[in-house]
Length: 421
Image (cartoon, rainbow, N blue to C red; front, side, top):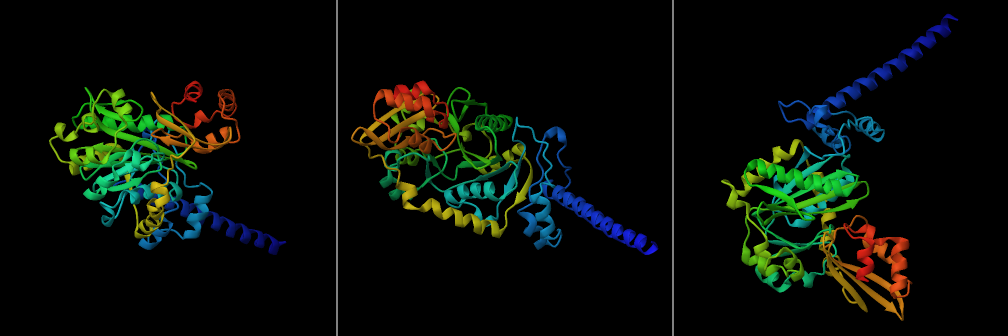
């Protein structure tokens, strides 16, 4: 009996010691996470600010170990997989203040696809939080996901002037950017896109107002100066369990290059009451007493209250994702050839063109083009609704009412789609 009692005590003692070590590891790791998220001398954000503060639980496994300050990677992985490190007090009404993503010095002024790939990398590999970073480019045209290159861009002019031409994965129209334009990228968790889009635009507008310029959110994706003139255009797209919003901020520009690079949609300009791309925009330099680099620096603390740094390993992984953006089929392969095309600019939705390929009277394929924003993969939904259906008004209307492909495009209604077709 005495031996059995001693054995039970010994076994209990080992279990207790293991449990105690587990708790100590957890407390130390939580402390380390707090240190990583808070600037030196600043306490962690109080719960009243509703901040998610659990970054680094996956990505920093290797980074902490390289610094010689962390826990064993197996323990970190075990805790992360079981969501034991999630300190989530964020409400759904705002994504700010966000976590700023610091990039190594050798990533400044890269080509646009590097930063677009960085958004994807954050979304795919970082734990759920709200990540924000800024970037600047050489002269570049960035087309929207569904735009046709030669219809939107003067490719010969861009080649002659050394202007880069790339495509992003979000919807919306083509933009011209250069070193006097600040680009912003926000990567968040899953959730409704519309309130996220509005939250981002209103938060950026408020930050700009605090620095002097009087701006407001207008239209479907713009920030404008009060009294007219667009200074920020924003776009978004959705990945599994993540949302990505990115936008431009126009401090200054070269009007000759902007005007020469872009083929404006005349109907879009007419709805805005302007005659050219240049006359539609305004410049922040006219309302600020400091330069573009200082503007970029001043906005960071207004939008973020913590930060995380990327490593050389992260940069190498981003560069691998970047390669896909240079594939010719991706960049130039949006085809507009079709038997029948129905297109229109729809207020609040944008330009929408549906290209139908027919086999006799049956729809064999359908492709989409335009500067609309997708809430879900739109072309997949339109193919599912229309392929193999007769191209007649009645069958098209019936397919829309049955499958509702319009729900994949922001601000497109069933009636508008039926009227278009």
